[in-house]
Length: 196
Image 1 (cartoon, rainbow, N blue to C red):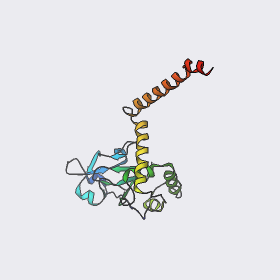
Image 2: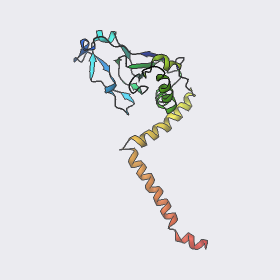
Image 3: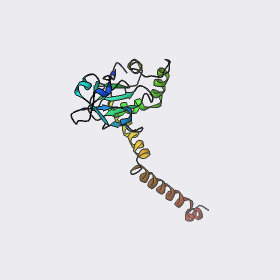
Image 4: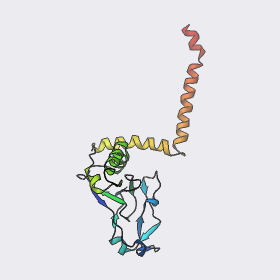
């Protein structure tokens, strides 16, 4: 992974309370609590840091990935905002020549990659994911066209599973049509008489 992307640890200005601001001029301060468990994107933050605090932190830009490195480590998110991350995050950027973002999201979120993160993070006394571990992970790099095809399939399943407004009614309609098809086939006595 380190050969195709830049992976760095976040940084925290200390003491953090001295750099927090309520003003709109502050820089979004991205924390684990700012993203929902099943969310793919970071779109807003509850707190902001001053420009001085931002200079002592790690900036991320829209399109960059952030990866939690402790607690629920290995969970990827795509930043939709400019902001700063503390040392509980890793930032992943510079991957665009090898990956489309949605494919990289699905790849980092996949069971094999997550299992490898867990295995390597567990090698120390405290489970912790660091930049060197993520850099050392071997990952496939399909052609961009194949990545786009895979993303289209996975995003369709994601919508069906996670969107009550879109996925559930569509699934119900498909099951209804399937039921009607089999009901009509099973109850078509004309075909049965002709076969006899």
